[in-house]
Length: 286
Image (cartoon, rainbow, N blue to C red; front, side, top):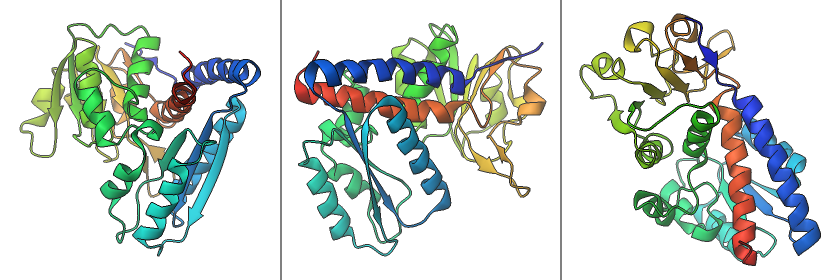
């Protein structure tokens, strides 16, 4: 069996082209320019790369973007004051605070300070609550990207057994809720799940989001399964790999996302989509 490679690069490119057309209409018909503010605290190399990629994507689609860089030793009060200013800035429709934050900052407090109607990352408790009851406004970008990848690849989710490895608020829990909405039967696994391989090997759709390089091996995967690899890990030789041992698994499954080029590009595409959606909502455009 030769697995189909689910290309986030290809699908995200299509989504960004569609968004560019929507932004063009908003500018010409409604004199509306969607705006995104990204806040970067400290000099984490990975975070800097992510922010640069988001800036490039904004420019490509026609979204106005601001980058606010703060030193690693910034006080929580200074950061909260900046967020308050952005909450009240009419040019800004989406606010993203790049995680992780330094230890002196209460990350949850910061995320809750973002106005829910500008929370394009979808992490505010209000938006998570809306997702829980099936009335979502802004969905966390990576989970939404995963569902979009599956749908765009023609994967039927109805009645399928979906297993998620990882229970984070950023990926594991939200993607479980989204899969439930698509009528999949969902199991969430974590570090205390035993035996883990027994659960994962039953999955028609397996989502790996634990941050452990090549953790998922061939014996943990059902033949013909669809595997979504959320992990991005750097090996000692500098190469990137996912949470799935791609080479060991690829010949056993029906479809799989690569790392890089799988879920990652979709996260940025969904962020842009949420920003455009927020701009329309602020303007009252249906």
